[in-house]
Image (tube, rainbow, N blue to C red; front, side):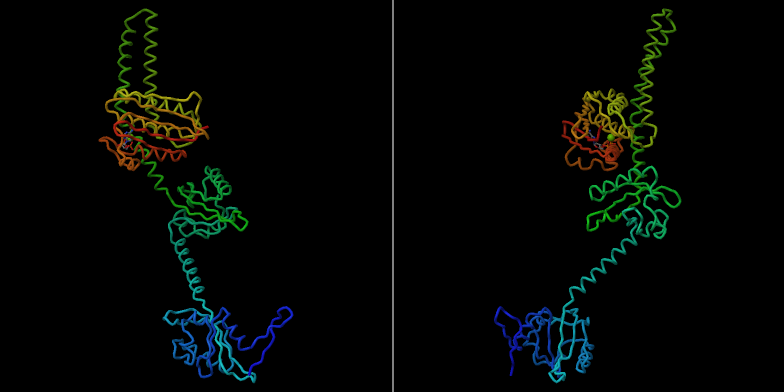
Length: 486
Ligand code: ADP
Ligand code: MG
């Protein structure tokens, strides 16, 4: 016999439910799996979520004993205790799906009593946490992986606060700069940077804050023994909920060897240019020397003041010319420290043309310069840029064994950029070979060493410029660079 009880009021009328129906409703709606087992361990009731979790339907289990199904020994002990009146809540156990897969389940067992307080059944409520456990495992695994990476990488990984105080430093710092993580944590990142780079380093942080984007930056760092290493560092900002920078993560790589290699390449390129230009320069100096000899003899034999003055002025002119050629050549030959200054582009170009003039004469090449009327000033390392221009002009001359013209064109474009192009009428470069240009030691010449374009490209990059080579077989090649100007 069952009685009906009113539960929820619906307007004026009360909705009346039968308790059996209510249990059905409850079991069908709840998000957890339910099973009721009688005192002989037989299933007397399961709900749809139980079937969803374990795959077993009512036909599979009702009337059968739970120990006919795979289960852990622990379950049997627990159920024994529940039969004595004990409850177990949210126990994490491993259960099995009908298809055999293991499931992580949080389960609650409680005794089910009748109105006399006697235990007549056992209720089990199951919550599938397989996914959660998996996620936790995954999280742990990723954490361990990250730890493994940061602790073992050769890169220097640091985290620092927005005030640039170091919060974390990877053990690799010991090997690279001689400080242990303990020595670094708490100190300021600026303590590690060489003084002359401080200003640029600060500017880079300003840029990160303005743009919110990570930056790659080359910086010189001091080691514990006051040596200097070159580090290429990627600095990424970490934001708080208010989208303000809260801290920074940096990954720095010791590129000292690469920087030294670069310097060696540059020197090699410079020395090869000097070697290859020497013959032309010697030739160019011999011409004025011949006339110097001749006029000196004439000077000795003439007593006329007017003639003497005329000869002396010719001699002076020729001496100036020798002086100029020797100076230009020496400026290329002497290794120069790289430092940036404000310089007129026309000076660098004129000087380049002077250096190459003997070579051009020797090969019947004419160099034509088309420069805009207004001055173009650039912030640059003049010696480095000269090395670039010499490389381009030399390549152009070498591409025209039968002579021709090189057109150098300078064009100022909007946004303070200047485009400089070197166009020759030479043999040209096949399309598929264009891809190899810039590879160190790639050359098609007997006496070439194939560093000109590699070094030039690197120098242009350091000037935040761009370089482009276009070519057509039998028509000619144009090398174009774009630079910032004032
Ligand atoms: P190198 O001049 O020592 O060979 P570079 O790096 O200056 O080395 O040039 C590499 C190669 O690119 C050259 O060997 C040549 O094949 C090609 N190249 C460069 N500039 C030109 C040009 N203006 N015309 C035709 N080929 C060129
Ligand atoms: Mg070259």
